[in-house]
Length: 146
View 1 (tube, helix red, strand yellow):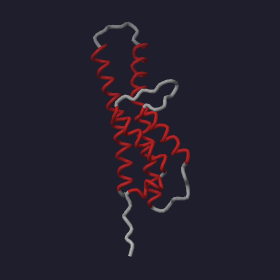
View 2 (cartoon, helix red, strand yellow; view 1 turned 180 degrees about the horizontal axis):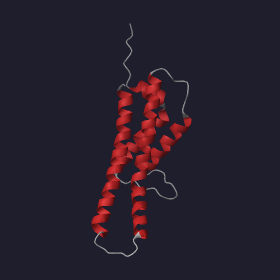
View 3 (cartoon, helix red, strand yellow; view 1 turned 90 degrees about the vertical axis):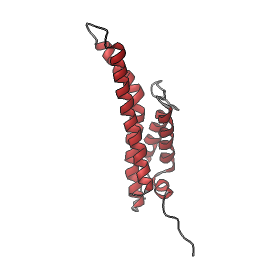
View 4 (cartoon, rainbow, N blue to C red; view 1 turned 30 degrees about the vertical axis):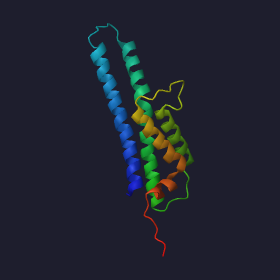
């Protein structure tokens, strides 16, 4: 694993970990704020709680997951398997990164939960647009000219 593989994986795990932390924070805050209210049938409010968690936590989670898949392609490109362009993965990673950054939305939902995710999402988009070959060569050793 070289630095390009490592930083792609770090980027993906930061997004996944941050999304899980945001989801857990929303769950805890919801419990603190609305936990004292006694409701006979709380199914509707439970549904709303999970929708809010999904809106805030799913875009960075998806972007992180796809960035981890992209890191595998970067590692393969470093080992010489550069014949496939993996267009579908690149497009979905770029779109997930833009969704996480709040640039585009899905069904009218475009909400960057935290600006840190916006930066990470844009980084995922940049590496997806540039491709796995470029990313694998990004931190490669400099060639010496004789």
